[in-house]
Image 1 (cartoon, rainbow, N blue to C red):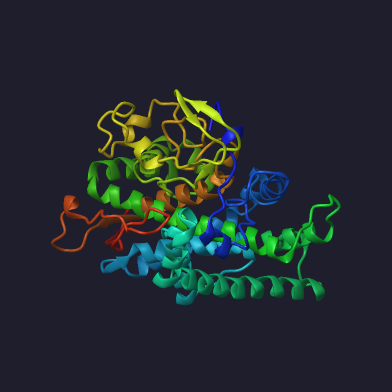
Image 2 (image 1 turned 60 degrees about the horizontal axis):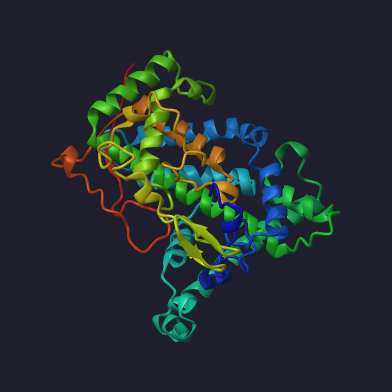
Length: 408
């Protein structure tokens, strides 16, 4: 990702992503080249640039306020925070990318199955003559079924936007990602072929990656705060001091919250959203650390192991946000001891989009509520097991808490 970034910025041809994401025609899985450069620049310029991310500020604050109201309505009783944080993240991503929220258990289940199938081991990808195993195990059928359901959903979203435009119902001010992609498709002068499937592949990227990884990270951070009451208390003191009695934390407050940022870095160190980053592939023969790596070699970066490396981190298994307070280390891909979003050319382009949701939601939940575990569950007894067989690192059991309003 540093010295040999150009040699390793390709993606291997993977069967399951090919089925799920329109022949790997998205940003994440498409091979390195002109097509990838074009679609990445479209996403970065039109959706993920700072101005665009800031334009959704009011919408994000409104969605967080709605979630806080829901928690408050259930104060004193058991709340499934995993469920609430999923819908918070999903609503923000949907409104930014698709123009409105799409609620329903069907969508939550579909996203869960998408992530499960994406993380499944496909023998046929690595040993072609064992492709029959994937057919026999039902993996191929599952992948095609999820792909069809997602395509039906996305086709409906695109058709809705096309219809709205036909009747002149959307202005410049309320443009979402789908509107922008349809504009780019219509005004395409670069000679770059922009098919309907390209539009859907890009929406799927933003929608699936944006929702799944952000909500998983939020659950991990609050789980660790419940296990470390002193850290939670220190964060509550920071957010209370900065809020100065206002009803909620606003985005303009976040820059001043150094302890909040340290907690987020520590969460991403211990629980990188995608522990084994999306595989890279070498494009030419190269020598690394004395090893000869031939062209076409698939390379997996273990971000989880890097974040827990005892030669780099003191007490690597301990949740200790203080380690980041006087440290310049960041997670944006330039410091290679912390790579939750990858780095180099194939680093995640949506970092600022995701982290602002993370910061705003975490700051407000801790500002507004005292969180506790259900009766009989002690801090250190909280189940921190990870869900296996998925590409994103999820907590195995839902995070159930008792939330009581915190009076300032």
